[in-house]
Structure formats: C-alpha cells, structure tokens
Figure 1 (cartoon, rainbow over the protein chains, first blue to last red):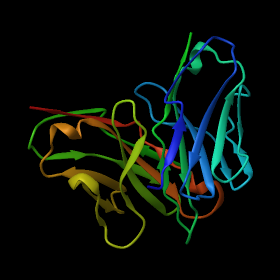
Figure 2: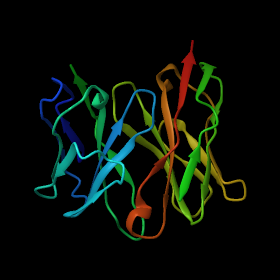
Figure 3: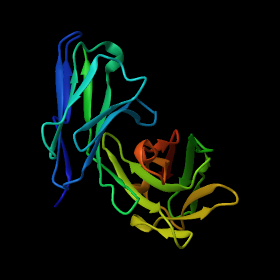
Length: 114
Length: 116
C-alpha cells in the first residue's frame, strides 16, 4: 500500500544532542510537510517543501532544519534539542493537482528529551 | 487568513448514541474543509473532505459532515458511535488559490470519548 512512513516511531535523546527524524513516502507526492504536535494541541506547521522549494514558517526556531534529498525522503534535524522540543513530530505529504490538495499523514515520531 | 473554531474541547457520549462535533471557520477566500481523526500515539487519518459539489460529505467509519456556507460551519456527525471511535478529532481548512493558501489551518481538536 502507498503510504507515509516515519522512523523511528519513538526517539529518546539527551538535552543538546542533535537528532534526526526521517520520513519517506511511496505516494509520489510533490509536497512534504513537517508538523510539531505537543500534548493536547493541534499540529503546528514547521516547514514544507514544494518539490525542492523549501518554505519555512516564520515562527519555526532556527534549531529546526530540514532536508529533502529526493521526492521520497524528507528529514527533520533538531540541532540542539531542549526540553521544550519534546513532542510528536508528524510528516505529511500532499499532491497539488487540479487546484486542490489533500494532506496524508504518517504515524508520527514521539521525541523525548532527557 | 483563515481560522477554525471547534466549539467543544471534549464530548463524552454513550456507545450507540448519535454524536455531532462542531466546527466553524473564518476565511476571506473560498475554502476546502477537512476532518481528521487521531488515535492515541498515532498520526492523523483523513476522515472526509469537502472540496466542491454536494454539501453532504460521507467519509470513512460511518462519519458524515455537512458544509454550510451561510453559517460557515462543517459539523461532523455519526448516527451511532462505537467504543473504537474514541479519539481526537481535528477540523481543518485550506484555501483554494495557490502558494501558501494550500496550508492547513487546524482547530484545537475535540476529544470524543465513547463510554459503554
């Protein structure tokens, strides 16, 4: 089945230790998104790629960066995680076609910062 | 700019009862509307969406929603809920025109708890 895959599902890191979360898709969608979701809150968009064009949200901290080496893969790098970065990180893909887009989400990676 | 208001943060119901989760939106442009469901420690799963056409939209798991343009609402309904419907439900909107208007704006979510 075509899908959005996130690895790992659970990630534990230490305060200040860089961490990378990965997302892959078999949907061949041209748009990929990274969201941060804290407990009992709505997902908050961090950035998105339209093909290779990177779009950063204005309030995304500099500590967060992303790479999209090809259509299928996208990575979220947290350079120096703080306790406040503990959250669920959701990857989503979308395909712009016919003037409309629907986003499809992966299962998420839950990040714990010790 | 767009905004979404989910009027109820929590909705407890008994099994086999009907349920309605309310969603109102505000936008200066035409919108697409979505409902997503999130089970504990999972990602968001698309329940249904309104893009155009019939204002009554049917989705997965027996859910449906009705788009009401005059009331700027997109309420989610199910005639008979199951224990397995216990989850967080998010309403979301996006714009029509290109560029960043395709980004989703989410409501704060409604926790549906189905009790036996």
